[in-house]
Image (tube, rainbow, N blue to C red):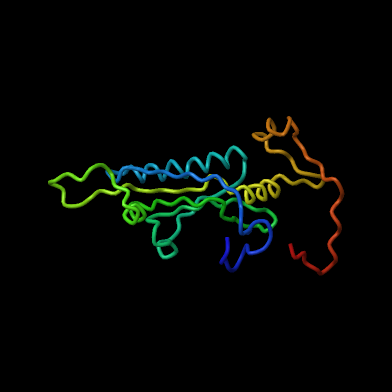
Amino acid sequence: EAGSHGRDTLGIFRVHQFEKVEQFCITSPNGNDSWYMHEEMIKNSEEFYQMLKIPYQVVAIVSGALNDAAAKKLDLEAWFPASQTYRELVSCSNCTDYQSRRLEIRYGQKKSNEQTKQYVHLLNSTLTATERTICCILENYQKEDGVEVPEVLQPFMGGKTFLPFKAKPAPEAKGKKSKA
């Protein structure tokens, strides 16, 4: 993600180009349809990380940190043991009608007795950012001699439950930190 400053600016975690699976929904502006969908979308992401048995927390982003489009944003942050911190893996936003007004994506036909047009609500949420999720799996499942394969992924790994390291990692020089 170009333009990011501060933490997480180096290495595979913060690459400029990455793969991800995104959820995108268009809902009715009536009632609480978009808010129910917002909850469903974050639950989809939670279930994904629960299946991987990765520790996570969901954080509501304060209004001052939101972009112009989002009316509400939730981040799912997963635990990274090496840095002893939670890091963002998922962002889930309800943009209500902010984007649809600019794109003229209307809901139904404007009736002659209505004074205003109705616009659909647009929502988007990451399900998984592939590289970040792989980093998280590696950190949470790493052992001294390799990496355990999460149970839910074992059928896709030919039944393998463990991936041993090919060679022992080089010892770090005393007093020097790795730049990676």
